[in-house]
Image (cartoon, rainbow, N blue to C red; front, side, top):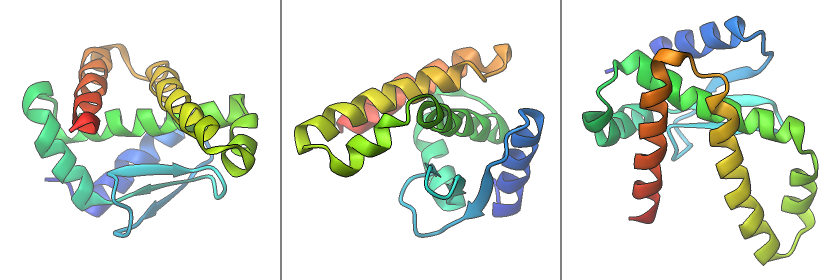
Length: 141
């Protein structure tokens, strides 16, 4: 089990290695393990959710808690890269029609996984892809 300070250290270390200036914040209010907020340029994490998500998925992936947290982080960094690359996304999410928003959210999710994958070290690529597939299955449940 990872504690709040462990997760914060992991995130901070990766952001420093990648030379990314993104704020990091703990929040026990988010229902996801981790999220990226483009408006505040902040990665928020909930250590209870991370540990729960780890328990649901990591029995198949079999990575250390630290590596599992990194995998989740790389996915969130994929959102960061997507919003930087494609600024029209925010405008559409604010002002678009419901069907347009739904389609765009699916596209953003797919792109976030792809962009995040470009940051993943080679030794974690297989695990990243496994988490991606298992995450899709969890979303369907």
